[in-house]
Image (tube, one colour):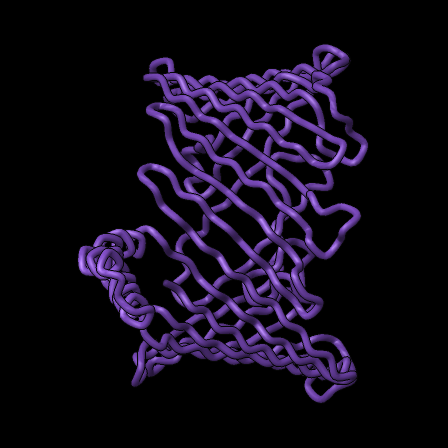
Length: 386
């Protein structure tokens, strides 16, 4: 085809004939390039992956619409993976980060740099890079962290000597707001773990800029033959001006079958065996494909799963996961109670539903009614993966 164009030009063909042959030549060239590049694009599809997650939130009153979208793209090349993570909200481009993870022989490297596009005065937020070198029984890790005006380097070495493990950590610089772009020495920590016949001992030697800080020896799960449901943890601490020994008992009342008793421990008198208090009660069972969970907690410690992160003291949930027409279908409804003036002290109702529409699309929705504050929150989330 290209030779026809060349011969026509030599014969002095008309302009229309030359244009027609040029067009045919370009089409032929495009087809040839397509045949050449097609396998490359096919291979590219094998190394390019990602996910697009969109969450829409509607709150009322007053009515407020929130949007959060995240596009994550991963590109794999040999032993390396390069990532791009873009975040959008109702104000526009909110966050952006780029990362890379890969290996050079025994050296593993990871790096990530983050930006805040919505704040022009401080676009750059952080850059971290970590390298790990593994040599037989010795592993060395170095971490570099940079934030605006502050820098830090942490060197960590970990080795195995027989049944014992030794770890040393050196920190230079500081990434806190009070830090600076220098490598002021912060401290050294050496940690040694070694087993003994009845327990495991962990020893830590710590040195700061002011000199010796402390030396500790900690033993875990020391058994008491007369009380098989009780074990002890012992922590011995040496400092320049003091020595302290702290013994902490642990209780194992067996695996719960249906009910869970949340217990608390108090030791006001400093005795070995403290007072045991019941802080809450939980119930979990499955009836006809529905999972029922109830939790009540009136103690001062960490709340169990349903109540964690909430101001409420009691919650009941009904949940199920079934195979629907298009894929796995899941839903849950949770009712929360608090001390208040509402009927039965009912404080909030939350529900969630999700369905997997194939391997590449997940859709979920949720709603929460805060009865005390008289507000409603609706969320809709869509995840597209490739």
